Image (cartoon, rainbow, N blue to C red; front, top):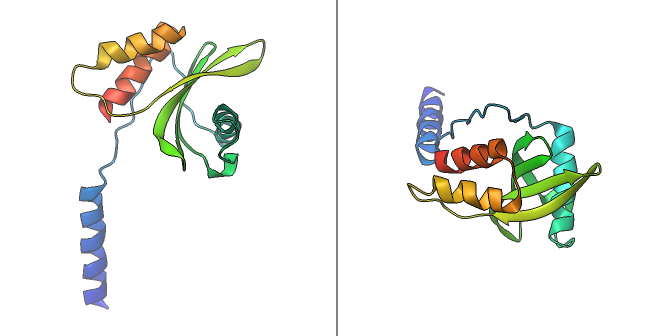
Length: 136
């Protein structure tokens, strides 16, 4: 059994090197608590935003940022690369605004803030979005 335990330990250590943990970004004034209810709610909203091409149960919501009436969630769907989905709440209803996906290069932070602000997002959510993307 010791040989088996050593093999398992080596395999686990190797997987940590291949898939490093992403440090959580803390953003002042932004609620980042991803609850089970929020996962369900935003999976349904994302499903609607892709015109029902994906069932909510197939959408994985991985992070959440909310400031005032703006919410950004990072989610994966089986039909596209993962992305940051932007929603604005008005009259107690969340409205999908846009999605940002891809890789950011060093120095892209200001362009990410500008992207979010062009949607109408507030300063806190724009900065948090940028910091989060740039930390990946």
